[in-house]
Image (cartoon, rainbow, N blue to C red; front, side):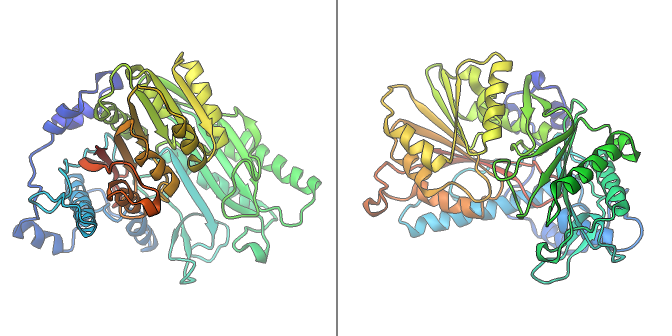
Length: 476
């Protein structure tokens, strides 16, 4: 296929977005035909090579985490297209309730392009988080992913060896960690108040062959000497013992008494190897810290960032606001197109990485601000007096943008073009879309001219799952 071939080329050979979209195989992007709809209702037979071994637990996990795994990839893309179409119909309906009629003939709020496929559809994840809990056999030291929910009290931890989206290196590290904790006299920590110590494992890898493992440990009432002993045993296992087959670049240890813990709350302790791993995207080298955000599909990220570069339509005097910038990947990738990049990120270590990445790649027209976007951005824009045009790119977490961020963007007249990248547009991001597009409201201090949704392009960053990375272009 022409598209698959184009997407697999090295970044320097990536073709323009318009060419990518025009090369997509022709598909009917209206409602499914009766024939297709009937076909969807039939129980799908596993495609060749997708049978699962052993008990049904593996199949239940695959269905929970990667519910589209049985479908041929082109059908996965069609399912995702229909899902994104419904989201845009919902947005159009919500905007109409606000008195804004932006509906297209097909009920959408703006044109929706076909889903851009992922260059890689198996083993594409560069980061995996493995839990520790009771497995199907009842062993509380099973390392894997969850089937069931805590609310229903039916959690079972199932090994991820058969999962199509997880690379073999991640599975290898997870198996070695399970072997280690099963030999440890310390219990796993299933519920904080019930005691136990060994908790989740995060594995990060890069195309350069680097592997970082981060072990989370609940200290309970252990003293410093006992903690030091556990860290020494873990290091020995992965450097001199059976775990050395993993060839870890970095081994981190974090003592945590909370479900999620930042470096500032409890520092990541380097037990072995290098403090960072490195990745290359669009010809640039990026440094990655343990908790820094980085797109989970590296090859897909290259296609996404190239498209963002075309959609911002920046001139040589444009200033790019990269909000929720992580390690600076988007801003640094586009720095050559604009006069200046201003990045904002809440994770302090990610800001350190972004500044290092800029310096290492010889990029001097970028500045990065650490802190919450709702505190940094309003202050930055309130004193903005430059006549240079501003373009904003936002890439928030699933929680979306804080209202003060949306208000600052709305009230800044210099921002005429905004790209919103969302991995969950049906969630809190929908609230942001409405705030960006609603009529001016003095009560909410939304005095600026509203934005209009202009174009939407879904990118399949998560094959076999139901999720897409949705890029929405807003203009005014």
